[in-house]
Length: 453
Ligand code: PFF
Image 1 (cartoon, rainbow, N blue to C red):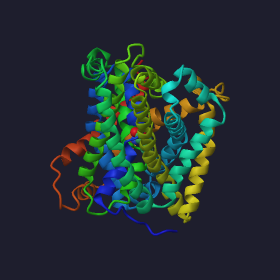
Image 2 (cartoon, rainbow, N blue to C red):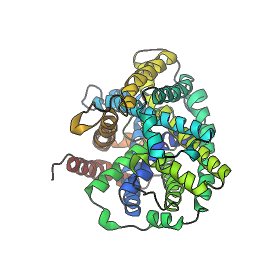
Image 3 (cartoon, rainbow, N blue to C red):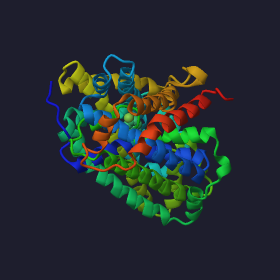
Image 4 (cartoon, helix red, strand yellow):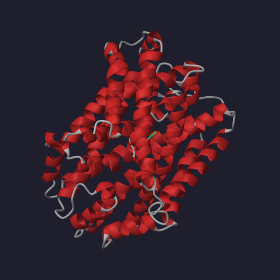
């Protein structure tokens, strides 16, 4: 088994964790949720969820990972041996693996769209909805794309923490932020874009109901990569002088800025083109945007090509850095628990995810008639179970674990680096973990299950 290493630098820690957080969730899921849940009011609820629930939970995962320097499952075993809490360790590992199975399918779509954009196809498609459904329902091409992105992710993970995850995050994240800045400028310069800004900034509070709150919370957890073992695993590679609260704050800030910037990129562009609607659902970035690129830039071909290439490159980079962080928890678990070589552990995770990913991918085509609970396809089932069940359950368990089960002094020492840092809000942080987070997450979760209806 390989020697355990740490991230080499503080910048590496922040960029790798931000790489985990910034992903399809920001560029693909967030604008979709904003569009479906009424715009600005949703964004406000979302920000509240990030600050009140997301941040404390992120710090808690950092505490567990950094204190133990172990993979997620073994971390809980060390902190609460032979107790029911160990379940959360396994749930974290399982959830990350589970998410990777369907996340890689959408990541594969971004690769296909990037290649099509490069070839000048995206800006010349006649019917983008038909193009999207023909592509996703065909049996082979989406599979091939999914396998290709899985192999890119595999390549990085097999290289290990410093040479793989840290080095690639340090290259990909700055590039990603640069592309976002360029695209925001492009999008703002379109005529009619003010309408999109109004949609993003003018809240309509009548839209807020329990569904919207649950969606905002689910989105915040998903976007910050909470309760999936990723942050805990990455934190196990943090050095002992890393500042946990500050790192969590930076990661949440970068993540929220990128999400809102993605809204800035997408909505002004969408509104500048009158005939498309902002609530086009998950097809937004694959169906609506190609139409937008075409109509908005039809007469200036190079700009349209450039915008489309940059946009899908952004999506692919965002997806890859997140996939790396979802791959690592299971890899680290296998390699440490079963004393495997990193290469072997990485292959096991990659191949098993590809195997299940095939079902998710085919659920848009040949397997579209195979339905589970409530008529969901494989893909919908994976998305629903992870975002709406595993995440809230994991969130409740983590907050109870750190709030009630872990020794107060242990947590305090960890967040203050044994007294070297001050953390005045520690009582508030503990109050949130003990009461607010479990109750809020629990109520919203039960409501979603229909208990109060
Ligand atoms: N946070 C990533 C995103 O916003 O796309 C997705 C993600 C990463 C989900 C890591 C889950 C995870 F464990």
